[in-house]
Length: 157
Image 1 (cartoon, rainbow, N blue to C red):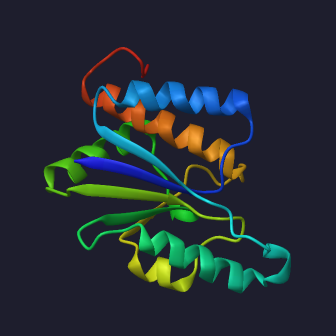
Image 2: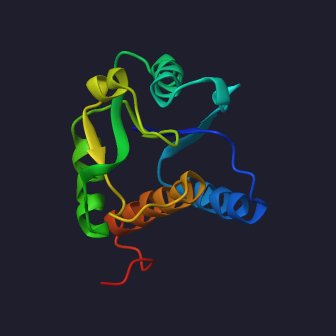
């Protein structure tokens, strides 16, 4: 199985990017993983929230193939413990999914078209984090999930 994380806008914090790169490298020992950055929409000052979500939604959907399974990182999604998230990853791998795509939306969330295409939603917390920090938290949780599945000593119960 391949895992892809789509995110709107680049990370401008070098320290955060270094950590993202570190966990991305660690994760590569377990699964084929890609972090794909969708460039920020230009001239957002001239767009309403709805228009911005629509434009971002079009870009997100253009990155998907017909067989991808789409999961949104969304504040209203299902919450997991790290152990349960590892179980969920194992179920996805066992189901024969070729590519699992997680998406971090823009500042206003997702368009209706993206919600309609999604096969699930995951919430990392009921707190709000910056979109840049969510990348690090999510990639670390993917890494943690795979170390749990391999019974490696990274996660302490």
